[in-house]
Length: 85
Image (cartoon, rainbow, N blue to C red; front, side):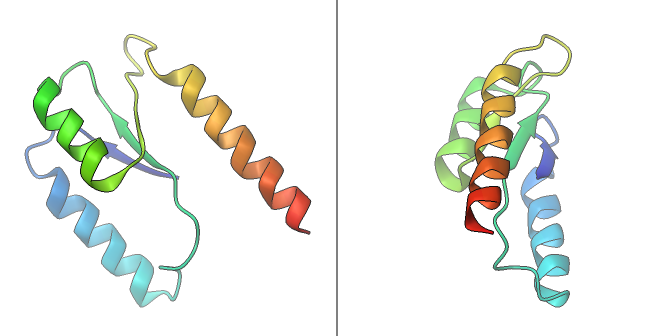
């Protein structure tokens, strides 16, 4: 799970940085669930563009929005991992 601050104007740079570290560690091919946190503080158009461009889920821990979808996505990822072993 990669949690990003959707309201941070430098969010793209942070994502690139983490992606680079994962690549350096040989982990770039691992499944990653992108979570765009602070959706309540992000500009709606910018948030929509982030999700459209990179995928993932928009959530607001403050307001609780998107958390049900996040739990379902985590459950699905864990269940899929169990079934593969």
